[in-house]
Length: 158
Image 1 (cartoon, one colour):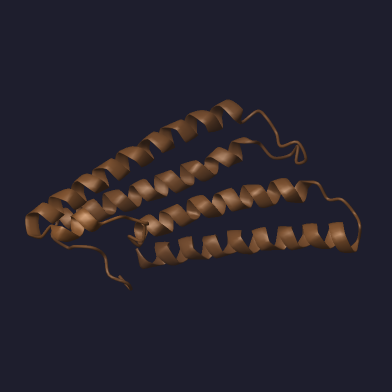
Image 2 (image 1 turned 45 degrees about the vertical axis):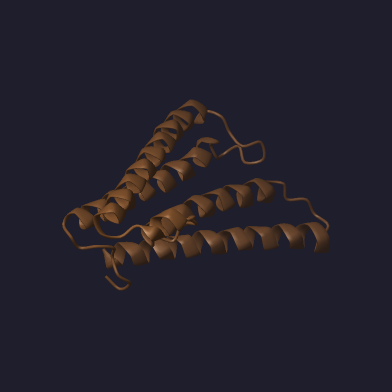
């Protein structure tokens, strides 16, 4: 599992680096060389979307989602575990709906192309949602299984 996390984190760094490189290329070409490179805007947007969905997976995996936990903090013991399990199930249902919708959309728009990158399908926008929601769903299911076995949340370094 540790190797999968490292690989996933490295892929996120690679996506971020590619996005920054494309934006720098866009700025240099536009403002220094005075040359228009139209595909850089769409590519940077696509990479940003991938990065956002990649971040969702990492946030779910690390249990670092933004939450308002005033009510949860007042609960103790079994009640808190039941609430945590219900929240996880609702999150899993949410990501399952997103995953199903993203697959449907990817299939329907796959024949269309970006306007400045005719070699790239618009379906890649939804592949980002598929990867993000699928990864989040896997993380939630693994955390629920760990909790059911009595292992509790995964600690850093595991």
